[in-house]
Length: 240
Image (cartoon, rainbow, N blue to C red; front, side, top):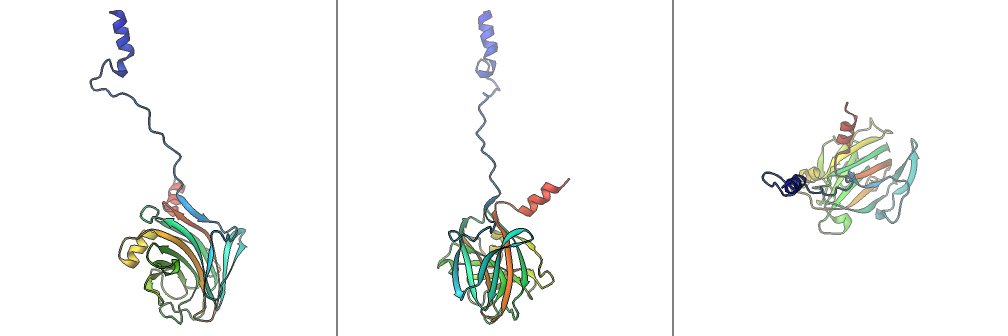
């Protein structure tokens, strides 16, 4: 009897007494947390394996520069237009955030984004989506720094109904200054096209002055695609 009681006591948690008890199991293996940043471009070099230049009307001068001690992409347009394209696939419904910093030193004189003759901008950041056509013919969101149109303006490109322009910086008061941008791609697509976003397939950067025949100079750095808002994460990190 003693041996039976002792055995029952030792096995209490694994079957001798089973009423209202659960058998402890090994916890599931938990891997390291997923990084919020799924793709980024630090612009330490202009990698031809990552970026392809597509000519629109001549070639914008793209090169790596250093400003304020940090690498960045310099985009100088002199009556020309070409776009840098990088294949980047992500689902905006789960990976929604696009962020970057840009700076305009010389805006396009005569900019008038609502017309073909004036549809130029010193700097644009594009997101292309999985719709019909070649990469530059697919539906796209065109984030623009406009000299005149107010922030929040959404309009159709003068050249294609497949491209929607979203003005995220405006005016000349911030010329020569870095400006940080962060956009929810899924929300912007729904606002621009009225439906949920399909998968994204590419990101583009462009500086163009071919329609006005003018000149422009701008810079881009710290381009990222993220699972969560970096601005929100930074606010939460710095809160007391």
